Amino acid sequence: MKRVPPEAISDLRRRLSALAPRSAERRLLVEETARLYGVSVDTLYRALRERAVPKPLRRCDHGVPRVMKAKEMERFCEVVAAIKVRTSNKKGRHLSTAEAIRLLEDYGVQTPDGPVQAPKGVLVPL
Image (cartoon, rainbow, N blue to C red; front, side):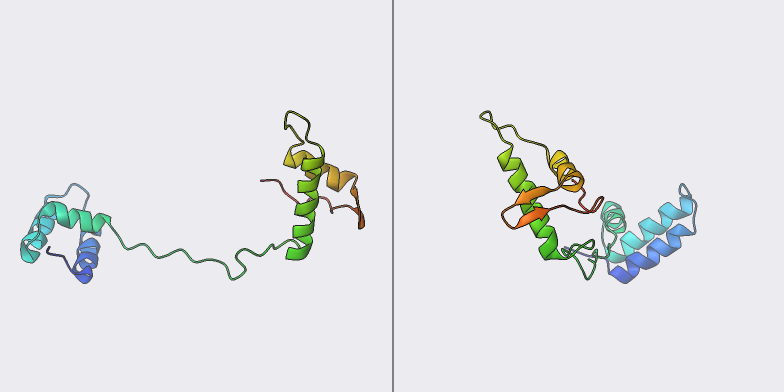
């Protein structure tokens, strides 16, 4: 399988960008380059389309909550999960996550470790 070098593709892309989209010179340039490298015009257009996209980077704090410490966030998540379990009925219905968070923020919850109340606006349901 013949391949066109990446340098040739980037050079061709640069030269094509200077021409009008429906220019006859554009078609001739692509045909000439395809003939030079021994590939079909379709292969060359496919190579132009498959532009090398840089790999997305992640933040250095990926997976770490920004609003509060991870331990504190985990504790609030456990409390919300417990609220959902405690409010389930025989049919398996329970409070929504948003409603459980609202209760935790507005009124707080009594736990074996004492009362827990989340600060307003910190927990956001997804």
